[in-house]
Length: 318
Image (cartoon, rainbow, N blue to C red; front, top):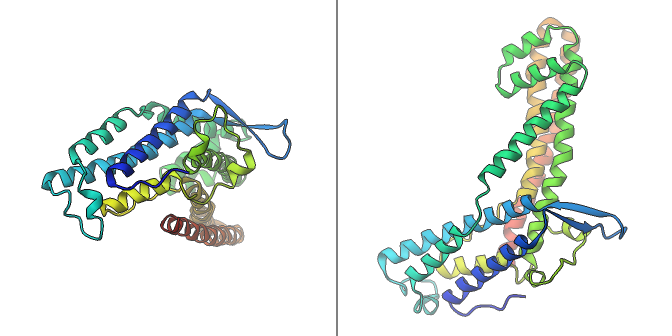
């Protein structure tokens, strides 16, 4: 557990030291980290270090930029003891210029992952293309995917008149659903591995992380003494709104369910309207499929949005 700092400067330095330990720890990882399952010791789950580094650096950069702005505002008025709300003693010894420079230096030391992010996006596109291409009627599936991506429903209706269009459209929906189902747990697991590093700073100096797959997957809450609490305490000492973590693991689930509502739901609904004009029987069946997908997707998304709000409340209570 990180000891509680007594002044704003102490809180600032404690947070930067914790960031340093996290970055140092991730730099020592090989390109893959093998995590035991916790159930069968000989089975291990790989963690892509590049993905963890992107998540860690993005989080730290976001917080540091917010701190830089906060220190710059206070440096502009040069009244370090003017913040109200009972925090005057915390600010009396604060050197805003020095604090700002330290935050900027730490921010400048973070690696840039812009090219890697584009690489991930390109690989995702290639994955969808190759998967669709390998299926029967692959060319027609790719054309339909392009029409959906460009919101060209006129072209989609035109493609619907081609032989085998219904089978191709069903395969397209199936491929996209399977990709979401496959990739979402991977994103969640990598994000929660990053949360292990932030929630348990006592593990950082260790030569190896003694953590199992089950423990990583269960990392949903904010622990006392975590880096999240250090961030909260520093922003509270500044009198600024606490900057919450972006819950990518929960957002991934929300996006997946919204996809089920707007992908198979909305797209099939529009497609059903085009088909209904020509074939009412098939059109009604498609309307039923669209309504079912939309209802399930929106309902589940609202439940997970509630989980996101619950996590933000946990930070205040930690």
